[in-house]
Image (cartoon, rainbow, N blue to C red):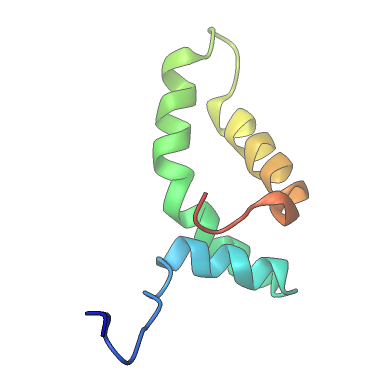
Length: 78
């Protein structure tokens, strides 16, 4: 007999992964959670690296648009 529990449960995905999976399933409104989770850090990172005259908010916005276009490529757990 092995020592594995009788009831195996899969841990719940983190909220961002759950939101991405919801977007993949057609809930486009769930993408707001993804943006909210990463917006501050992405904008800060972009602001540090942008040359003068480049709007970090615009660059971050473009990054989120591109991520949304490719959201179908996301695989939970990777």
